[in-house]
Image (cartoon, rainbow, N blue to C red; front, top):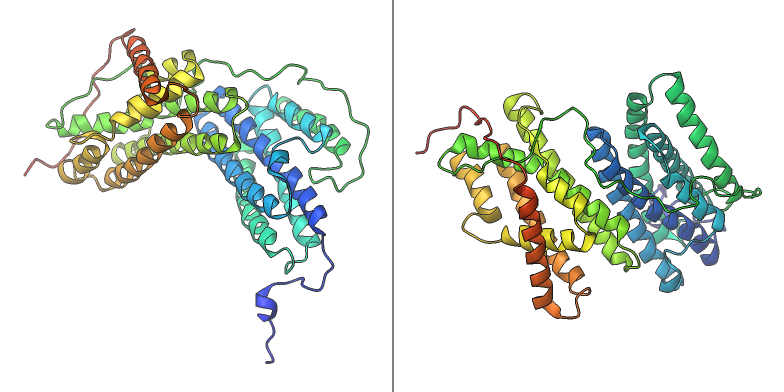
Length: 423
């Protein structure tokens, strides 16, 4: 053989001594901790910030962080790390760094700090690949390579968001000042991966008290808003399609409620937070499906409104109540046929004959089946009285949601034009 480019299974750096198992575990434990905490940071500010495009980007990234942490947790168990130590702060300064980052005060500080933290993660993962023996530590290397690719893509998007949100000398000064503040704690931690020389740790500044999410809707002016809309029958195909698009658009409300569930429910197993993170991103995806369908069909993403009542309920209800209501009463009811999620898909395919909404409803249906199963699994651990007690609790939550809905009148939406006549 003359061409050895694929020798050693195509792995590079097989002759480098590399990192030992304890050294690998130490680095990856720290990076896993940062990924987990960044999930919470982005979720909290997803709820609290009004800028829709940035909100939805944070929602996507928080779920990426959850999946990164999940991969790293699995690998750390293979590197002889006890499960009980996963998720615990590996370094006091690193923990304080992430606490201080949580206390970003506005969109300028959020985009600056998230962009900076993800770029520092990107650098730490790159350093890991440069230090590891890619043969000995091949499972870690493959995980790190996949995570690194996502961080490269994420930082490019955050560069765009930074330029959009950080405008003018005053905003730039605020952004850079907050980054400089965080860098002091990073230096005290010896870098995110702990491989740098450590400095003295400054005292806590903003994080002397836990961060509190504001329980109020945060919206910019990019989309119309109403309290609620009247559901027309399927026979009025154009009106019913408009209603379906606006319902999808409005799913940002339940996503924000799930953000509160994720951030304010404490001392649950990691699997709970991973599941809620996924559920949250799915609901944001559904909202974006509505936005994309409206823009593709009507030429303007603001042509149809979103509704507010569901978001107000999520801001007012306790986390356990709203999660039980969403997972069992609302999404559980969507499993019933006729109508339900299958019926919505059939309407888009057979009656409205709208290919894009047909695709969106197909995946929305699949997601909702997953969400109901997640909710049943997670909530079953919270009720000693079993399924009966849980069902009664969820039903009461739905009644509370209905009372919120009745506070203001619903409106009629304009119909989507040019729907083919029924054959």
